[in-house]
Amino acid sequence: MPLNPYLNFDGNTREVVQFYAQTFGLEEPHMQTFGSMHSEAELPPGAADRIMHTFLNIGGSTLMFSDTFPGMPFQHGVNNFSLALVLSDENALRDAFGKLKEGGTVLMELQEVPWSKVYGSLTDKYGVSWQFSMES
Image (tube, rainbow, N blue to C red; front, side, top):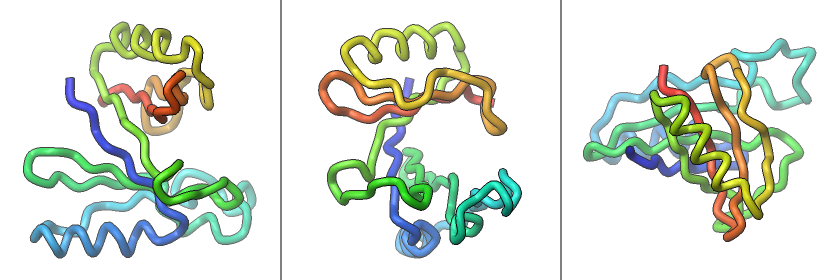
């Protein structure tokens, strides 16, 4: 059961990912934007071109990336990273979410989203940010 680091940036994810891809001799990955998942009318100005999700496989590990949504607080070293638990076992995913939310703060209850049958996020009682997603 691998845990994937998930790094968040404030509008410069594309630049960061291009830099890491070049550094590690990787092809630039597909970058899903907020605009590709929502109509421009649903998004605040400047959100459409921000990166909603992308990832690089570096040395056998998956490093995930996203821009913050405009207006969300952003602080380097405080809320610009999380751990992503990506499983194909829905029961194990729900069980881990249920245990980690005890004493923590749920940011998004587990639910179906366009990219996953089950997705949710929380901050556990120790201040660690988690994302949960079903493998497709």
